[in-house]
Length: 407
Image (cartoon, rainbow, N blue to C red):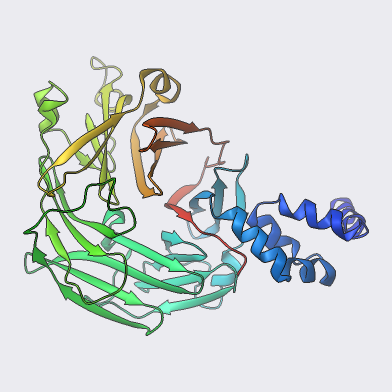
């Protein structure tokens, strides 16, 4: 009761400040905080809705990158949290109340991806995808794709992409149909899906440093020595998607021939430890190399790994190979190298920067670290993350996003 009284008193005191001072204070808040401030009273809500204020906030937020984590206890207490590279703490996103009209609180829900103000979730039992708009506070049920209803296990992060601008969005994913890659695209403007046949790559692709924003790359299959990737124009048009089949030769950059046989795509399991993990996204690949902590102990102890190196690879000009780009410097690796038993990751490239997040679990404790590689300056940055309070919770989705706005 005392906490509620203090909160009310603080809110009233804040509203009594001069409007210019309130305006300046709001400008330095993160977007989730500003959205919450609209509920304080009508005068604050009016100030936040002012178009000049909205333009200023949107201009400042363009450069911010966000990492979102959806975590839950089984069938209860689900919460979406976000962390910006311009902040120092995690922000809770009020997502549960928005989903209540369409999803039971006991539903098995998974967070797929995000772009701008749009967040996609998939229901495992209903096998449906829902698009949540954080600003308009609306939920849209996306009709089943031409492949039919799909549960959480059917969606592969590196094989899908959400492209959003304010209230409009495109959702794309690629799958093998009769052993042939097919691209599926949903448009929120028409509320319909279309499927597109792919063609083999017969010409040169723009280099990674020349095709910024021109192509969307979706991984269809990933194997130890190569991948199948579908490339499509970033603008919605009738140009057919192109199949790219890049191969990888790790021997040129690493002399350990065993690496060729030890690979997992994005994760490793207890009792089935691997020395090399791959994470794919946006025409790039991260190779995470690890080593055993104690090879002489029990099988469970041997499944504990320690990071040795992290490398970034990209598509070659003609799309026939994965080419080595850079490796995390040794001094930075010493800071982030931790023991782990399970690891997952995601990768996103935008504005010449490759963002990588790796999330590992060791003895029921989750750890997250965020790395960025600037392709223009050839420099690595580690963004320290505060504790996300994952103890006792299950990770139900992780994704990067940019372009959050107030409108």
